[in-house]
Amino acid sequence: MRKYHNAVGVAAALRPASPVTLVRPHAADRAARFFQERFPGLCMYAVKANPSPDLLRTLWNAGITHYDVASITEVRLVRSVLPDAKLCFMHPVKSPEAIEEAYFDHGVRTFSLDTMEELEKIVAATTRDGAAAEDLWLCVRIRVPSDHSELSLAAKFGVRAEESAELLMAARQASDALGVCFHVGSQAMSPAAYTNAISLVRAAIVSAGVTVDVVDVGGGFPSVYPGMDPAPLDVYFQAIHDAFEDMPISYSAELWCEPGRALCAEYASVLVRVEQRKGQTLYINDGAYGSLFDAAHVDWRFPVSLVRESASEEDLAAFDLYGPTCDDLDHMEGPFLLPADVKAGDFIEIGMLGAYGAAMRTSFNGFGASETVEVEDEPMESLYTGERPSAEVIPLTGRS
Ligand SMILES: *Cc1c(COP(=O)(O)O)cnc(C)c1O
Image 1 (cartoon, rainbow, N blue to C red):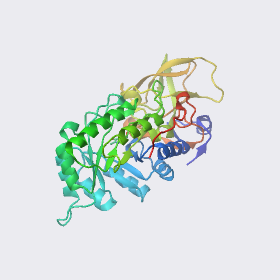
Image 2 (cartoon, protein in one colour):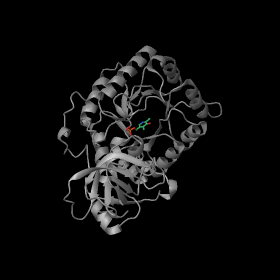
Image 3 (cartoon, helix red, strand yellow):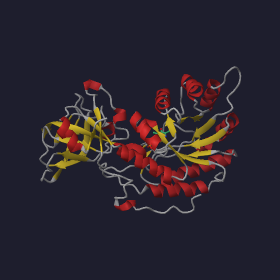
Image 4 (tube, rainbow, N blue to C red):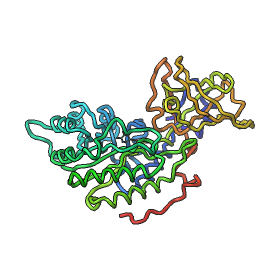
């Protein structure tokens, strides 16, 4: 992959007419090492946030050995890039073919589920010649609120804690190891999301009277975006650690997490070009069907910066953005703050797009293509450089 110092260097060298993805392997490496060192349990990477093989190798080299996959295509991909990775199939609604291939061809042993039907499906798909699998790790997905999160994951999956006893007991019977898992929603802005969820799960386990081998607190760990400035991750880790230690099964159970966003948001930015300016609206060459799905559909604000050899002297002004397709929906409301003299032909770097950015890109209307290059400078924001005022390291107490 070609390497440059920063976005200015890329713009000067390539004058790219299509969006270019700028990747920062050092930022993903730093995030992975942070989780490895400071999360008080096992950290697996949720592949859907960004399935790029280069990123997968970076995370593996930083010590991430477990990968949360949700489709057979993700299973095959991670297996081919990282032959020794442990894969956990954490989508609660899978096809029988996907389960069978994952189990028999790719060595997957961990599956999540939230209904009796899915449990029966997993058992059937992993039975051969009348012999049921004896090495399944089954994680029952419990429904928890998304109250503290920017993107809800509360409606689609999960058995209600108060209705989970029967399923927990049945999964216990069918498994070698039993887990409980949940997802508090993406970009959880308060550690209370996790402590509330753990109390729900605790009640479910107690009322079912089962022993549990794994408590998986899922993803949802935040990154930094304009208008979203979460507490340092150590505060989340401490809260999770304390709530987990209070569970009756903590002495024998493992604690897992499945971050997607927090491991890769800082990994990539995108260099786009302004094709036209109309007042405070900029028409750029990437958008809702490219790497800016969240900016368009859930009004996510990403940091932007004007990429010029010599910085503009103008004050910042608020802009909204249109993407390149012919669709009205291809609109990013922002506001995006750029120097007031931004004009057609200028390049803009849009930051923090490593998670749910390039992964969502389509080729709708013929605008899909994008080159990827490596840059060495720091991401526009970081939870891991210790430079944010709120990011001073808070000591973890009582960690086992
Ligand atoms: C999406 C997802 C994740 C990752 O969520 P983030 O908010 O990106 O951390 C983890 N686990 C499951 C089951 C998911 O669906």
